[in-house]
Structures are given as C-alpha cells and as structure tokens.
Length: 139
Ligand SMILES: [Zn+2]
Image (tube, rainbow, N blue to C red; front, side, top):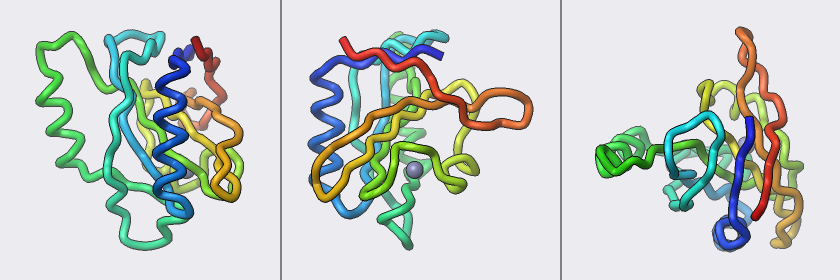
C-alpha cells in the first residue's frame, strides 16, 4: 500500500500528539476512495478508551458512523486512521492489530517526551491479517 500525506497534514498529526501527550491521540485520514491512499485531509477524533490511554486508543463507532454519513456522496471516504505512540516506537501493538481492518491505512507517530519522532504507515495484509509496512510518501 502507498500512503501519501502532505507536510501540513504531518504537522497537524504532530501537533495533536503533542497536545494529548502522554496519552495517545487519534484521528481520521480522509480522501478519495482508492487503493493508493492519497490523503486529502486529516481530522481529529476523540480517544474514548477508558484505561491505559498511554498505550491504547479507540474511536467511538458512533463518531466513525457520523463521519461516514457526512462524507456520503462527497467523493471522499475514510482511508485510514492515525494515532500516536507516546514514548514508544511507531510499530503497531497487539491491541492495534486486534482493532484494525483490512484495506485501511494506519499511520503511527512515535512521540518521545513531547518530541515527535518517526512517522510510519502500516496496513493489514494476508489472510492472517498481519501488519506490514506501507510505503509512506510526504509531499
Ligand atoms: Zn498503537
């Protein structure tokens, strides 16, 4: 999978991660529906997980539905999700894998002591649904 973000979108993800540090931030990647994920814009979401917010995020399914409803007929779709890993590498956790779906792009930002570090993209591949690195391009 190829994921394309603009420098402004990366800056927005970094700013979000700094605001919620040491807890995880999360949000949507929106754009035209296609195999190549050319992100048109990023949109913040609320992390509604009750426990271990430094290591986990969950987006309320009602928020996902409302975004999908809003996008209906617009030519844009949810292409994937971003979230931060405070004081942790930009590698999906077991929890991430259990809560991920095929086709979507998963962008993870590592943020160490408030300083944004690695940004990496992942997708679920194969019948066993393991995370594989996606090709992330920043334009
Ligand atoms: Zn994660």
